[in-house]
Each structure stands twice: as C-alpha cells, then as structure tokens.
Amino acid sequence: DLLQASRYLASRGDFDGGQIALHGVKSGGLLALYAAALEQRYAGVTVKDTLASYRFFLEDEQPQSITLCVPGVLKTVDIPQVAALAAPVPVAVEGLIGYEEAALADVDATVEWAFAREVYSLLEGTLTIQ
Image (cartoon, rainbow, N blue to C red; front, side, top):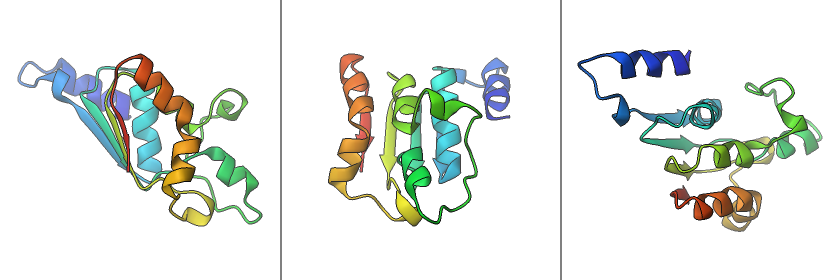
C-alpha cells in the first residue's frame, strides 16, 4: 500500500514525485525502510523508535509480538541490511530499540548498524543514527 500510494503521488502532474519522503514510527519505520530498499525514488527516510535488529526479537526469552516481518527475510537479511539496500537515499534513525522495546545505547546501535554505515559511506549517502 505504501509503495502504491507513493507511485500514485509521483504520477500526478500537480505533484513533484521527487519530493516524497517517508517517516515511520515503530513498525512503520520498518515499512519505510523496506519501501526505500525496494524503490529508491524517495527524497529521504526517517524512522523513530524502530527495532534495531530482528536478532533482539529472536533472542528475547519472552518475545513481544512482532508486527512486521517479510516471510523468509531472516534467511538473508536483517534490518540494518534492509537500510543499507536503501542507500544512497538519505536515512535518519532516531531511537533504535532492542529487547522489550528498550532504547539501544549508542555503542550498541553503532555495532548493530556498522554494515549499513559502511554501505552508505561507500555510496556517499547520508545515514544518521541518533
């Protein structure tokens, strides 16, 4: 639905499709990252309070329900790799979360998202994690 909505907006003659940016909170952040990975038409992506890695969900002794996971995705990629696929679309991340929706420390976020940072650096894109 998100992809179709942005395609529709981009097709309108009275709207500049190159100015579409995505913003998502919690699982909406995952949707925004997946959409940018699939179509790099977006001016930017911001995500807030989004799961840092599916690993946190899988390792939690009492996992919370997971609201968004593409079937089979865990066999090939994790959330930081999905973000890397969006490069060089600018991505701003605020408040990555881990176990039981607890905020990740800066050091943990740096480690979890090292691959995405490297890809963005190579492609001269902007990835900001706060």
